Image (cartoon, rainbow, N blue to C red; front, side):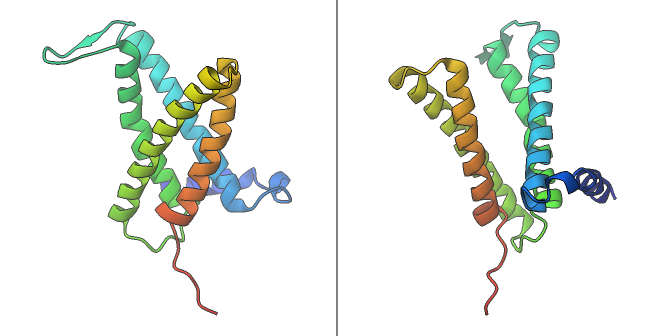
Length: 161
């Protein structure tokens, strides 16, 4: 089963980190990091080699190449990210898959919006250098995403004492 192989591969690297974080947090970092690298890699390939930095004109709608590359990479990284979070990181969730998928979509949409808002806020209002703004935004959005996924998207049933 691929999910067991992925989980075993990630867990192999966990021992040096076990005093720093729980296994679930480590799996989240590994899966989220891998999915982010996949997304950025697909974006770069689509932007540079598929779209050749040209506008994607569908006849009735045209997309800037970076927007089209974002959409194309999102179409892959979204389901991969959901699979990794559901089957590798948050395996104890008691929610139905369709509920998880809907909540995951809401979370991802919110994270895209938060990225936009925080970068704009940090650059335009606080006058941060854009790279520093992106780094600060990433820390905030990752923390928000982890907590939201743990306690909302893939929540587990509360155990009664």
